[in-house]
Image (cartoon, rainbow, N blue to C red; front, top):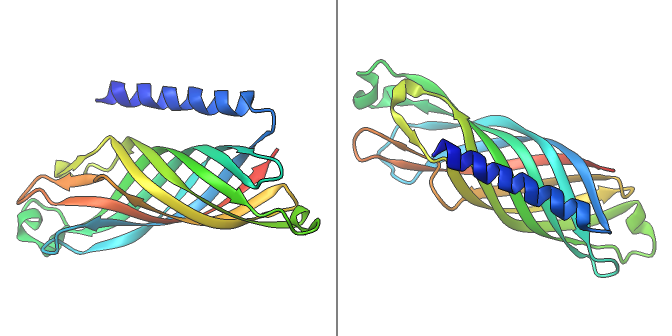
Length: 209
């Protein structure tokens, strides 16, 4: 499974670099941001889970169609998502010596988005241009917490992302987005193997070159 994950990451990197290199009207930039994540269990009879803060950083490639406003965006990011499990709430886990456990999920994220930038504002768009974007996120798990070996992790997590933001001076993009998992991120090994998904709010800043 690990070998397949690394092959998928390599393929994503090759796709990312080829798209940005071949596009004559493309831009690329560096991304940095923070997130607030919920590891959400579908089942209700589970221990309490606190949301957690994390971060993200990487590269972005953008290709916009001149005069139309629509375009394409791809990113290659390292992302940390986290949450705190109150496993002391259930005897099945507290009897194993587990209590308040911080779960950290390390991902290589590849978001691919359709993007719209409103640039018909009589020149003011060169100072401030609103933008929206949406598309899938492919998250490859490259590291995680052990938590007493009581969790089973999915190495590929697919989510959907939607975001809004602004572009300042045609150089800096600041946006916020919400990503929710389509597939599960992890399962518990005890009881009925409860499954959980990521639900993540993120704020990012991109500097374009």
